Length: 152
Image (cartoon, rainbow, N blue to C red; front, side, top):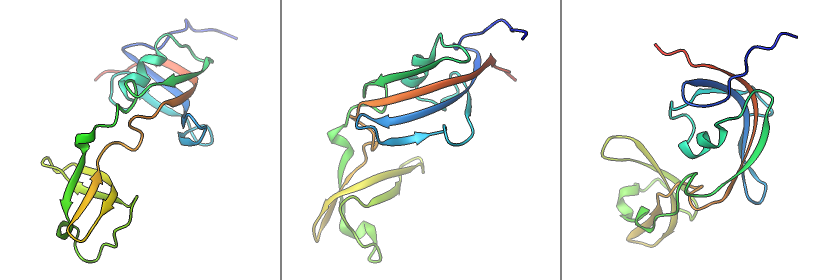
């Protein structure tokens, strides 16, 4: 079997891999192992930088499992991201409940998802932290291919 010179993952490479992101209790947040592998170019923002850096130096055929701390993942929870929003901003047709996922447009018209923490007649406390913020994560990877990235 001919062996091309193995490239390892680093800047300027395109990577095809299977990955799974799990919480530290083992529940799976996201996984490609049952479907088709993911392909990304290092630095294209598809993967969080903290996840990407863990892959540097790996080659096709490598399997690894990393523990990802919040600083490398989705950051720590920020108390300032919990905001009080007037109840009338929700419209009368929304039945509020704790844990309800709601979405607002921010100043740049980006969708900003939040989770209802609590509410009363007047106000609703909405937590805009990423659901995985403050969590230690497990990042399982199996590297399938590493190629030079085609830059246009």
